[in-house]
Length: 115
Image 1: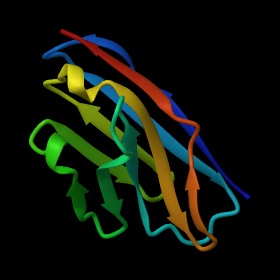
Image 2: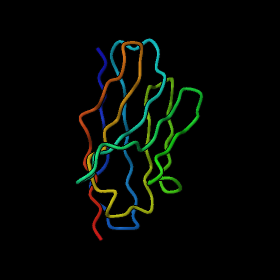
Image 3: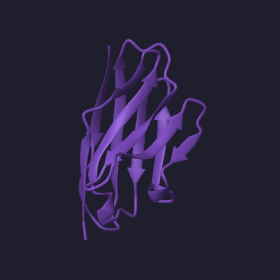
Image 4: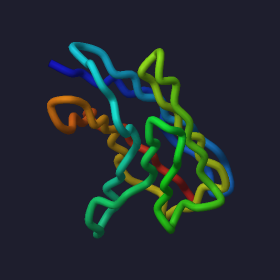
């Protein structure tokens, strides 16, 4: 069984910064991609970033140039640095990991950005 522990998030003002971390544990033999999706009010869940095992990053259009992700393959962790935050970034951010048994999700971290 694979577990994801998320930390970070919280409240920020527009233009500010927050970070999220995600750590995978359990029986994991092979991790392909890690990353985040988010659920913002009134919208469908959308991609924030995929971080592939070879280091390739795939950002959602709405966060390009503002958010930066990285991962540590040995530690099975990933970090999302969110800068220049906007009120429309408010939502619940879900970490995911693609492994040998499919995709697992974290419980989500709340990010709230005030104007």
